[in-house]
Length: 461
Image (cartoon, rainbow, N blue to C red; front, side, top):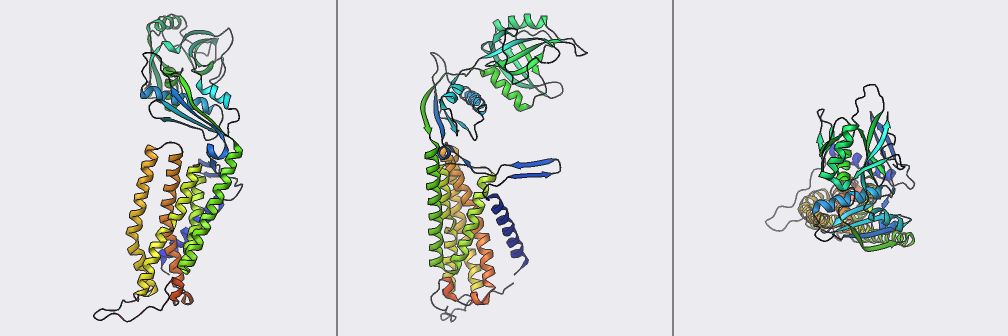
């Protein structure tokens, strides 16, 4: 066996070992340190709403009279709702736009649907607050600002615009502009509370709050009228977050519940059980068919199919892919598609054996001539998956992702795994010289038709 196939076989063994570890029940996960970098991964299946139960809500924008809904308004609303949902600590939440005026919110495993709905439907209130005189911020960012000692200067309704900028050191900052009424209040406050300390002495702190939660705190470096900036040690992403809250701390448009559906965990578990049963039955039927119809190559294909299942399930954990019923349907469909390449190859193999080629030569020709059909059919499926993912939402995207992963891995197992294992079989004389094991009932004819040269056997490496 030449060196290339030995290297390929070693790679297959390593991949199978890694996939086997990833798919172990109650896997403790990965915690690897490589130099200063650290890889920490929770190796478990991430189940969607329909499998573990939870809340599915469709919110529809209901603008007031004369109010126009723009794409920016809807994107900002989605971002604000996503932040509020994340505060619930829900695992694998989904918050996405649908059309021009709807937002879909899915919260798997949520225990109190009414509380969750109340949280992300609230319009919220953004405010600029006088935090008082102190050496350090009297309230940490993320803390609750409450009490009579904290005086509200004005609300976010007086912020005309906000955007991310960069200071003299190229660090992110927030540039904002106030409306006329807010500018008058802000100019008076900032002119009286400029911080001139150089020794850590107390200064007046200005806070920005959303629903009484502090999102930013800063001292005042100069008089600010209608335009100002907020500087600090935040990252570009944090600066963008603050800008969104400054512009749309209150939701840009009111929302109403267009659809509200709660999925119970019992129904979800029943769906998981049925899906697993369907997957096992489908895998077993495909394996039996390949074994009966293609005999020894069918055995090889069945081994490759098990490796395929290990690799795909391992990717679902490592990525991770959020599994829904549609996603599992995509995986089950890809199980059948995983052997279609083998079928094309094996049919070519049988055809070449009947023409009188040696087994090794028939394998070479079978794989080479089947490849273009395998490639084109799988590429067309991947294009369909891309279209479904781009234009679809929710469960449609889940179906597209799992099907695409299955198609890509099936190409690897059919062309690489099956081929490598079959070449191992070819090296065994007791299996090589029995055509019936390859689905050919009669011994191949070695005499070529008149005027033709018999096919020459390939030279083994």
